Image 1 (cartoon, rainbow, N blue to C red):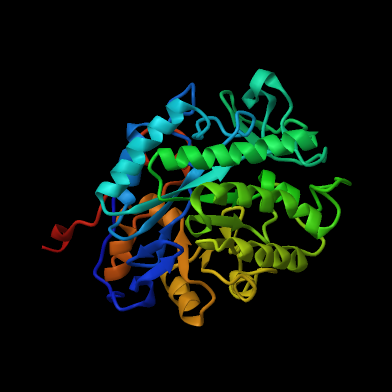
Image 2 (image 1 turned 30 degrees about the horizontal axis):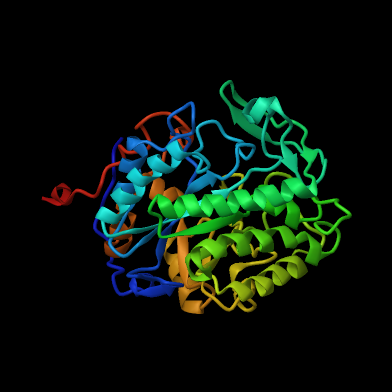
Length: 381
């Protein structure tokens, strides 16, 4: 894999490289590594391994923050073969290798706590049971099984006792994350997964206290946040949302009102941040220039009183403009971090970026994972 690096205009005085405080975290720069599903655990068991520790260590920076790949909190929360969990002792021990590797580089790392909900297949479920969700609503999507990508199985609706059990799984996952050495946790309430499925009325058709009104549909997320904050304290907890996301058959009849309510209610927890994804990327294709998300990070930031993280296909220049406008406090990068373990340095000094290899994003071995080259100054000698 070749790298094309050429000297460029330095960016070291940009706001991207100024300190920022996210709850109890004091960071030296505002470039955050996104939660990136890579599907390289040891199987069976979904156990984080040494290869993953090397990958995270490569991308850790002194005073920087990594948000881990989505990590499953419940045995029925899996939807992708090879994704890590944090609901067994073996998984927790595996994560200790990764947090230790990041800390040795002076970095910080949050665990992203996850349940896929209906986005699954019977082959990934305990005893081949049906995937679970807020309601039995058909949708077209795919899950990754040992046999490859297959259409998701039709889900069943969760009972109220089962909802309460999953809230407890999130709390236990938060405890395990603390035992594993993480610096905090992010609740994954985005991208068409379980918490997002409860929020949006295209997927939530319930008529009990967890469905119907905006207040009821937000109840599950707020109860999960309360449970997780009881372990960490709110100032070491983040929440990720996709107010304008449509992937996974998602949508809401009034996203402005829904996510405005969510942002306002999350204020009560004193969170480290609210992580808002602006869908600047649609099905891996950049939206046309001038596209504006229906509910963007800047809008949410006028309601949420804590720090805002913005994500969604940003370039270095886009990120700086967003920070300068005050629409976010830090910016989250995904694909660029995949291909550039030294992304922060490349941004700072204006060096050309490695191109990413989409074919190696999900699953596999070291190729496209730990073999991307660092900047080599001798290129210019």
